[in-house]
View 1: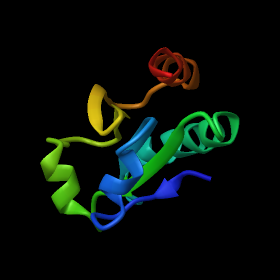
View 2 (view 1 turned 90 degrees about the vertical axis):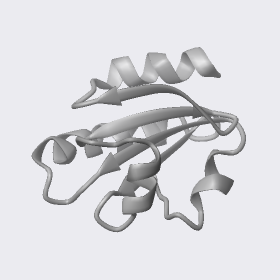
View 3 (view 1 turned 60 degrees about the horizontal axis):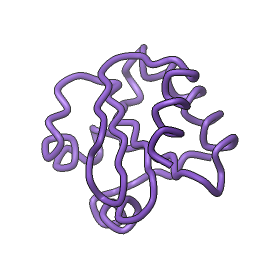
View 4 (view 1 turned 30 degrees about the horizontal axis):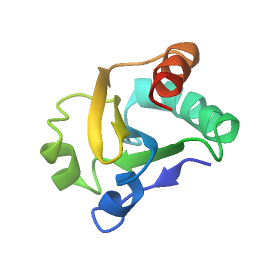
Length: 103
């Protein structure tokens, strides 16, 4: 299961290792297609990378902090620093290879 992050849990969750964060909203059509892919990756990469999601309606400060203008936006973090930003629906293979390159 992808971890739901808030502004209170965000920094602690991304500070070490590799973390993929999906910025989404329940009303967003492409987000609904991205979410099952994100959930599959969280199962497959359990123990090697953290897969997380942020509801932009509930956490507008985090979306603003990372310049999220359209969703879904996925940001890959390594040891607390953003290393890749992808806007729009992403394939599972594309996301998995980007994550594995950072491990």
